[in-house]
Length: 468
Image 1: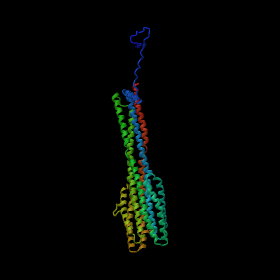
Image 2: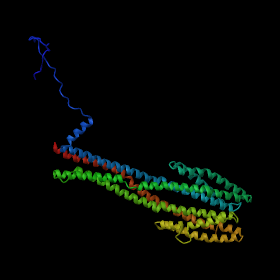
Image 3: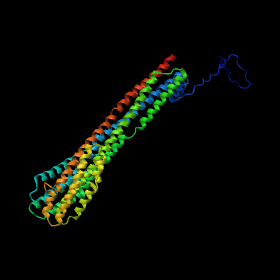
Image 4: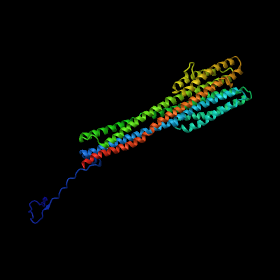
């Protein structure tokens, strides 16, 4: 290109010098293209790529693989949580709830044994003394275990602290009552009544709150283990829908019915979705049965057992009070009404019998109902003797080895122990089935997700190879 010439500046009126050279004008800079950010450049190139069929196929393959991987990851995450909750039901919350019930029963039975031993006078039967000491030892050991396993429950910890503080005070009062009773001093009865008031007013309410807290934890774990995995189901449906769309698109563009890679990815996703759905249904059914036929039955049986223990304690304390035990007698009638009611099939025992799903579970409950009926009859006879002033015979009717209310109470106690052991085994069997149904889903989801994503990539790669 010819450069423009620069003429020298001439003064007005002067003559140009022909020998002076003419200089060229400086060239103007060439225009620079506009600068773009890395993100803008990447979007521009992606937009250019997807305008071609190979580019679109690459994007479709990446999206399909991502959706399948997300499906597998979400399924693994949700079923890991549900498996953990089922583990907690079997290994933590239900055993802790059962231990809390045993603490309550041990305390109530210890109070009953203490009052029965007191009625024997200074010559307390060795078996009664051993029963009391065994109950106290069991309650102390279970409290130590509960303290170690209830760190996540402030409510449970508060009740455990209250029980640990109150139990030594109670045992001290019982020992004072025994010492005075052996010497024939009436002060022993006052100590025992005070011990009984502390048990009824402080220790048993704290044990009940502990049991309630542990039962609430069990209910929460049940709810977590049986909740539907909606995110997993939604992500699975989305992945399968995207795979179906991709195969239909492939058919419309190539008239080929099957793409083996996409077909394999679809099969893996469908299997994963059916597996998680079926496993959840089985687990929900088994865990539901463990709750309805195991945990719920255990709760009702514990209520009946605790009620019978308290009724036995009231019966004993009515005699310990020597004419001033009308309040204990009223409490006895209230407890017995809740345990069995006036008609067969009523009360806690009637409810427990209706919850039992087989004869092995119903038989001991029905035996307990019959024993309660005999207990009531003998109790009325003992009360009649006491009201007539025949105190010694009334005591014999209550704590004697044969034909006494104590004998029928032991029958109720034994039958309820048998029924509770049976329902505990039922719970463990059903809960283990539910946990087993959930245990393999997370690992299967990961494996099937990886296989499905790989198959989708291979299927799209097969189509891309046709453009090379």
